[in-house]
Length: 332
Image (cartoon, rainbow, N blue to C red; front, top):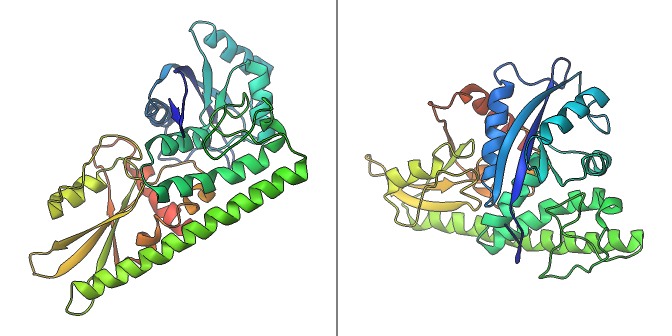
């Protein structure tokens, strides 16, 4: 698969879903473990070369915060299940493993370990096309790298602008040059400052373009309508049907849209409007990840109206609806 400019091999994945049976860490009432596994499977197989060869739901009590998540009996059950297949990696279907969990699980199973955060960021890195999208992904990676520094420096190889490396405890992220801890943190701080400055410049440019479009397609104010929804719910296809835009190509793939785009249209009432296509939302991801896409979400923040697109045929419709509304609330 692709990671920046580097190509990685395929993975045969065992998908492990921790089912928290009770307590505050349990799943929402309108979500089932089976549907959560199905979504995680689709996430993994969005990455070219990744194939989920088997999945298993493993119960746990109250939360997933212990360093190996499960006790020895359930860990043994996962190992026995793994031995039935030619597994090369595990995907633990929780939002984000802690640095300690990632290291301990990698050492315990002797395989690369993925969670929803690393899978989603890997998808972003593969399919990002514009400079703006790539900058936002680089920004989203920095908190992960900063918190995992002590576990990332496995290879001793160097990080450059054009080279990214695999670490056994964080297989999709760049390794940092072997520096003293304070120098590593300073490297990251300067990198974050540089990226944020570039993104802020992009946000200001987007604001100016939206203002110019409103003034251009007068008289008066041209409304901006932001199209929001769960990933792969049909947002781009909806805009294409309304605008007949030749530049929009709806794809049946999670996170097919990583950059916001705007499209002028005229309503039956002859009022001109601007439709803004936006990045899709998804459940069980740290809100900081979407917050890193501030430039892309600028169209949502500045819209005069938001239209929420939902896939009525999806069996997890209500959970997807609630996730979009909760994410919007958390982004305020």
